[in-house]
Length: 227
Image 1: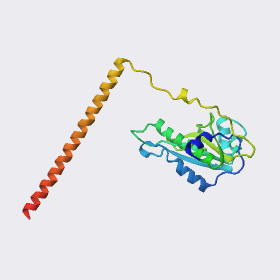
Image 2: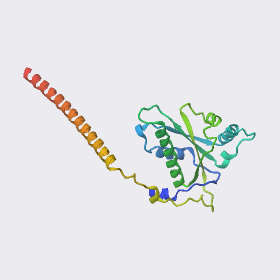
Image 3: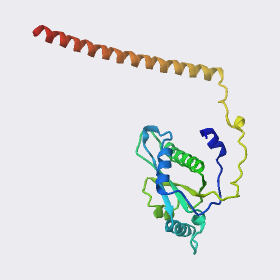
Image 4: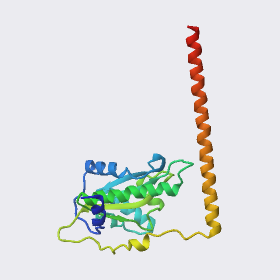
């Protein structure tokens, strides 16, 4: 199956069976999902697998966040929950929103890989996702935020996944607005200035390189004449 076919076939499964991928299978898929575009290779993400009693602990944290007396049963809808965490790294070049986009990308690719491997997946969130009790339950650090959970389990036999509307790609793939003559002239001037600076920098680098080469050549000649 090609990547295009896998993406076209992917759908969310709101109900899944009681079996889930083991840790070793998950490690392999996570390693592949981590290949998403990542500016400066910061790896600003991590995933937390919740199984068994972990899900009950999450249910208690959700109840605390909502002020409920009884634990939430939502985390028990799947045998495996994968918490998606944005782990922000200090960077002058890569803002937090871009780092969060990387974490989201990992989750999306992982959901595709799990689906292709035969598992049912749905990405769930809630108003309690970034609450203090839920963050505490996951052991999040001060520079981490939760983006939700991938609920993973077996695809039930004889049942269909959730329906998705067809994407109107032509309407969503757009072009920028046309520039006025003044805006176009300003853009062209800016582009020319950028090219001038680029050429100037390249020329300066070439002169510096030539100077070093001449210096090495002179030193080599002087050494040869003394011998």
